[in-house]
Length: 106
Image 1 (cartoon, rainbow, N blue to C red):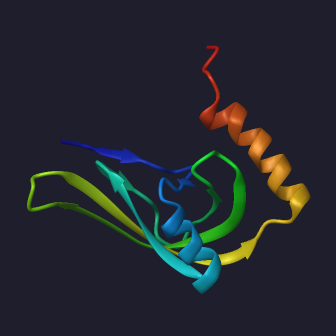
Image 2 (image 1 turned 90 degrees about the vertical axis):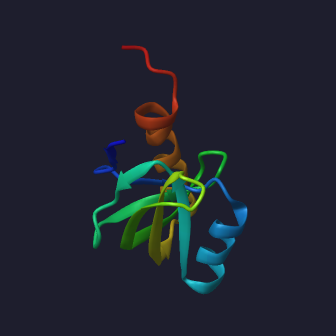
Image 3 (image 1 turned 180 degrees about the vertical axis):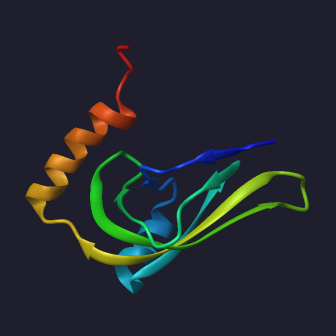
């Protein structure tokens, strides 16, 4: 058991429903497996399940807990700051591929 820090918070949605809620209602919560720390008040880029940058969000809560089934989970609540423009999304997607999602060539 330990916490994984998300200081360069990448809010990658695994659920289209959670992402759709963000874009439609301006806020959502996503569930992540394991204990993670998302700094409340920090802004970060939100990504679709297929790694496409779509929006800037602000983290409003990060709640780590153990479920009744014994699983470590983190619920991350966020508000939509704004959608990215087409150009911003293209650039952020390319950078994230190199920095976070791409194959490590270390």
